[in-house]
Amino acid sequence: MKPTRIRRGRRGRAVRDAGVNRGRTAGFRLGWEHGHWFGRCEAALQAVAPPSPPMKQVHVLFVATGKGFPYSPLDVAIADALRGQVGQLTITDTKQPVAELALRIRPDIVLVLDGLEFNVGQIDAIRAAGIRTAIWFTDDPYYTDITSKLAPHYDVVFTLELVCVEYYRNLGCRDVHYMPLGADPASFRPRNPERSQRHEICFIGSAYWKRAEFFDQVTPYLASKDTHISGIWWERLKQFHLLSKKIELGRWMGPVETAAMYNGAKIVINMHRAHDDDTFNNNTAGIPAVSPNPRTFEISGCATLQLTDVRNDLASFYTPGYDIVTYSSPQEMIEKIDYYLSHEEERQAIAMRGMLRTMRDHTYGRRIEQMLGLLFPV
Image 1 (cartoon, rainbow, N blue to C red):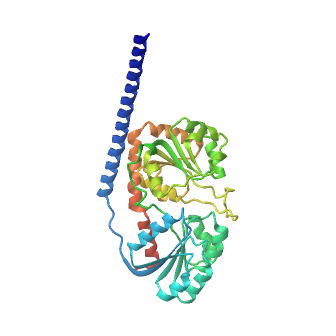
Image 2 (cartoon, rainbow, N blue to C red; image 1 turned 90 degrees about the vertical axis):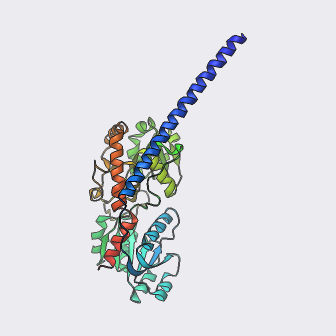
Image 3 (cartoon, one colour; image 1 turned 120 degrees about the horizontal axis):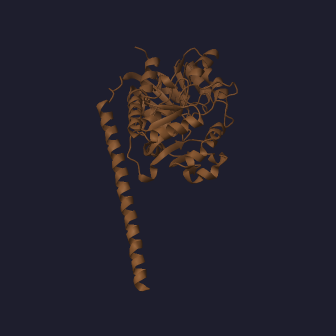
């Protein structure tokens, strides 16, 4: 019996060693592919680096949201963009005595971000002292029940939703501009992620009810793929058990980790929030949404293929089929995932073009350049 056990033991070790070698080879190949792709992206970025934006010799008092995560990265990104484009920048937040500060330093403009938790009495005092004010709404149209009461207190209104431009004008706001958010290239850029962050398909976001209803129709398909989902409320899925091992439930990720997950995926799904969803919706006027969400720019900035649902104004920012890919139904999503998972060169070409378009046109640096041009025309 001993020789038999020895032979079986040797066969077992041989099988194990062969498996280890296959795993090592596959890991090496995957690492090389990601490293090579990362290098290509960095080389492309260096070759098309945009010129530095012009400097405006003005003093801006930037009032950050002060709301903490997930708004804090947005506070930092916009402050950094302003810092490189204005002669003097003072930063505070909505929790501080902003009016007292503004009256003391008398900036050329007071720019408030979001402003949903900011007492507009302070803005009234600032305007009464002859200092210009502006607000940049970051969540339109989902909080227009609130923003409709805030907007008339400001000299200038910026909104990330195209439809809301006319809405605020009808409320009596004279100076209203369309200004979507963007991508912060310090975070959302090509990266070489960890092996644990690499998947075929990725989605990061909350399972609002209408979003969950859509995912209910593709759950079995996503369960059959190397899928990663992260966010809150995903237990709402009717077949949650099929995807439970692929979902990081209730977890918020910072920008750099989110960017690493985007980089590690071959395809990142984007699905916009419905304007009439029942979850945390303060849009009783039923204002529709046609503009791309910030995730649109952040995903593309990471040089990964973005598969997004259609927003009417998306084509103002990207060209579907060229630097972004769209879907309009669960079946079309499945078909396009299958197609691009099996057409690697085409997938990478679209992803590369999306990254270059983002870094050229859709960073916070570009948004602030456009905003300052509107506030302080030559």
